[in-house]
Length: 133
Image (tube, rainbow, N blue to C red; front, side):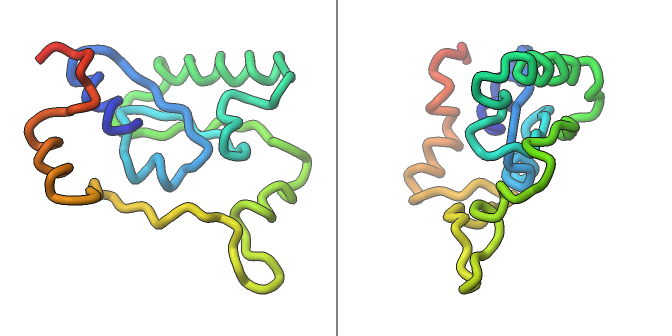
């Protein structure tokens, strides 16, 4: 999303990314982002907790006013639970030392499946077909 956000921003439309994966967000370097230390897939708040969701969205939109340097990531100060046990099955190794976190390592530079993909990107953003050149 950071790559698309940068292209949209280059066309004069402000963007703001929401993330629950700080290192991934930092690696793709969107123009501006908010980070929420919630489980992946819950970036907009807890299910069926409408007040939590509204509060997160208010703080997220406020970041348009607060973030003044490109690439900044603002951390939203919300807690998923009173302890961090929910992270045990996601980000930490189990008793055998194996991690259940199946995400691959992230890089600061784009990674392509093959040279054709890289060529397509260099020629123009193929996923931004809705933007005029």
